[in-house]
Image (cartoon, rainbow, N blue to C red):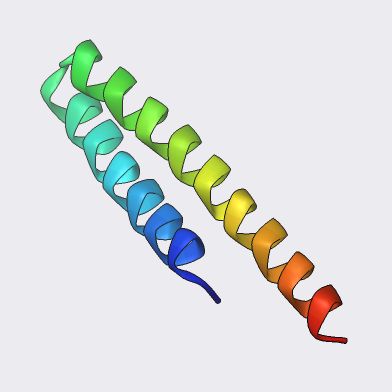
Length: 60
């Protein structure tokens, strides 16, 4: 697991917290930011997975 996967997972968690906080408080902007953070985290996590796959293929 590389840095991108860890940071991506953290970004997803942060986004989920923002989304829930936005729903609870009725703040649609915060909720939207949370959803955007989650998407960004998923993308970063996927990039990390791709890097891991490439590294593993090169090592073999």
